[in-house]
Length: 238
Ligand SMILES: Nc1ncnc2c1ncn2[C@@H]1O[C@H](COP(=O)(O)OP(=O)(O)O)[C@@H](O)[C@H]1O
Ligand SMILES: [Mg+2]
Image 1 (cartoon, protein in one colour):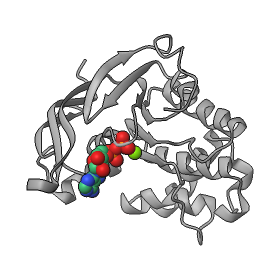
Image 2: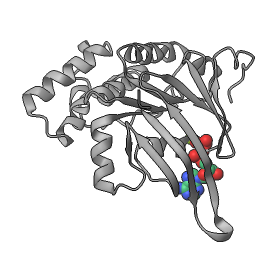
Image 3: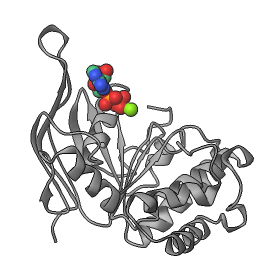
């Protein structure tokens, strides 16, 4: 089986000369289809930079990135946007919903970009909201929803184009512990349907619910195969 994500000797350098920052340095990372893994490491260790590259939001300075078997490291912006829309769903800490749109309108947006006909957009958005248990909140605007509900709308939006991969950067960072459990339950269910999930988190309790933990430090992957047991001793937020 070909890996879903394969970073080969990937570096990302911001700035030049005295201001050069090696955000990622010679990173090798492979994620197989169907995995559920988390990325941990101190602040500034390159986690978000790695997620931006994996999500085709940015290109590496050097190295190769094979996504679903295709080297995307040197594609232009349009080609990257197309791949993102087809293969990847994003979930962010601050939800990033459009406040003037209802839940179902927010979830329909990615299908507008991918040219799905209106009737089908309605049906698929409604099904995605049902999947995240928000069938009864479809016509609410974000301000009429709790934080956990808003994040579930964002998850519905991330899955509505049936992506291979869901990337989540601190998806529970703005939620209380009860809602965190709800949102993690949804991620587990998604993963059980075969979607690969990669999530950045500072919380060991969150990371322990995934099956594999990748540890970053100073722009490098220091351990790509930690298990929930390996981080069992961690209690404080990283
Ligand atoms: N756009 C940018 N320009 C310059 N430096 C950046 C940029 N984005 C990130 N960095 C730097 O790259 C390093 C890694 O950042 P980041 O990937 O955001 O880390 P993390 O998500 O682990 O906190 C940090 O030193 C950060 O300051
Ligand atoms: Mg970050």
